[in-house]
Length: 174
Image (tube, rainbow, N blue to C red; front, top):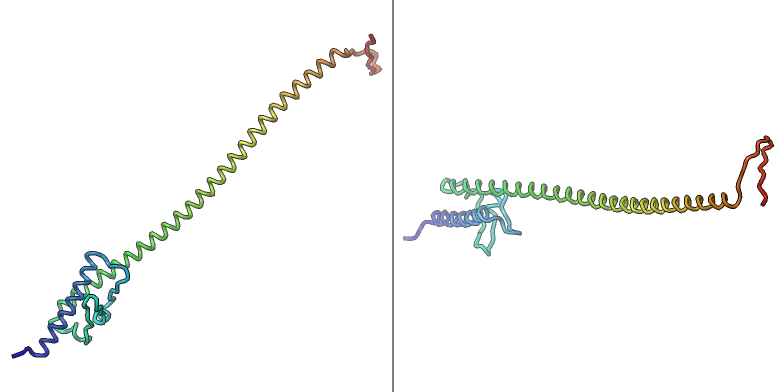
């Protein structure tokens, strides 16, 4: 005698549920591969199908609510909650990483700007020091020239003051 249709449907539904649970548990253990669909709730879990993995749609929405599927349903809810929590953590982590990346880019821009300012200031300082040396050398040259001209002036003509109050300067004639 064959099995009754209800037991066949029951075992078929449990097989489908267990196959999906196995894949979700693998996602929990090893991470979610890029581009794979993850059900968000029991309804999407029930409709989830992937022929490449042998996952089939569960026909009736009531199948998950049957008493003999209660433990499986509970396990599905636990796994979906854990996966949702991981997605939220990953999303928050991505946001934090992005914020840190932006902060680092801003700091890098400030560092580049400060480095450019430092180089410009150093160049200006080098030019100012070079000008100061030139001016110092020019002052020394002018002082030597003044001293030379004063010496020549003293040797060429001697100056004397006359006390008569006329304010006139007489030069000695030779």
